[in-house]
Amino acid sequence: MQTRLSALRLPALLAVVALAGCSTPSTPPATPSATAKPSSSVIRSESEADFDKFIARQDRVYRVIAPLSVKNAVLCKTAARPLLGFTAKNRYSFPTELRDTATVRLGKGEELRVVQVLEGSGAQRAGVQRGDALLSIAGKNIPQGPQAEIEAARLVAPLLKQTTEVDVQVQRNDAPITLKVALTTACAYTVDIGNAPHVNAYADGRRIMVTAGLLAEVSDQELAAILAREIAHNVQQHAATMQTRATMASIIDTLLPPRPDLSGFAGSAGLKVMDEKLDQEADRIALYMLARAGVNPTVAIDTLERLARRYPATVLNSYTALHPWTEERKRQMAETITEIRKKQASKKLLVP
Image (cartoon, rainbow, N blue to C red; front, side):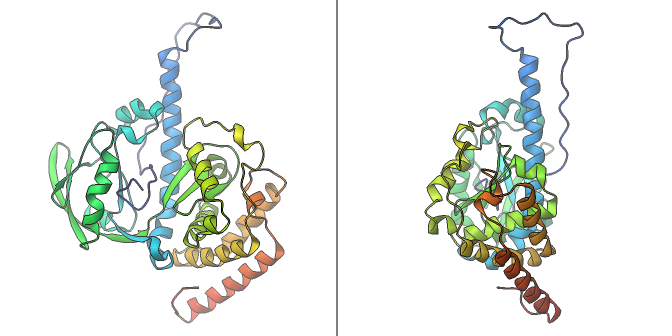
């Protein structure tokens, strides 16, 4: 899940994030008139709360998807890329409402700074740290400003095709440091968080989105099961097969803002129910991805069954509504898990 510089666009981040404190007046405020504007402290508090949710959710998704991305490059086929293994952002990488808070909390100004380091990557081994300001990569100065991510991607992408490691110069504690970073081959799909309460996930062939509602509903292992399936749908280009790529992409774009317009989600949001054979294909690949990432693949059956009970197909915009859970899918998944267990026992390569 890319800041155009890393395995994932996942805006989202590693460790320490301070909690927002709400500023409250010492004396009761006067009752506001109908036309009164909210105070700057209220606006700031809302922005800080949104930012904290934004960071915490993305931190979690990045942590869960990291092993799925790194361990399954061979299964991601043409989507596998040599990557730097970290995510870098500046204030313009965040929604407009969160930019001021991002500047204060994370020191994100005009320069691109590292916000995530992919676990198990060459960047992690080289010592890249959150907060490092990017100065240069392979001797090329990193741009700053509103278009920094896009310009940096254009600058760096060709360089990564020509080598297996690059020099990354960062500024840390006001001092420049040069780190030799081995590139990490991983599944290079963008992953975003959708700001919607419904329990669902989407894949448009190049991006993946999980909703805030889904994140609140599932454990980390259950989240891994859902992410593995969405990766598998992208690997097999199922959105193109179903002719829903444009609709999926539109839904992902719609849910990106902190407070999106959800009026279009009253029905099915224009999406077709996934063909069962395609779901079975995704199930099979996802189970192998989970096993390769060190996750017990049986969690996938448990997760899908639980979601089907709690949010059946009759619940519009639910995961089960798009991916109906059937006994045939369960049977085939159980057979695939048996197959995986036999391969693990005989130490055979874990590929479908």
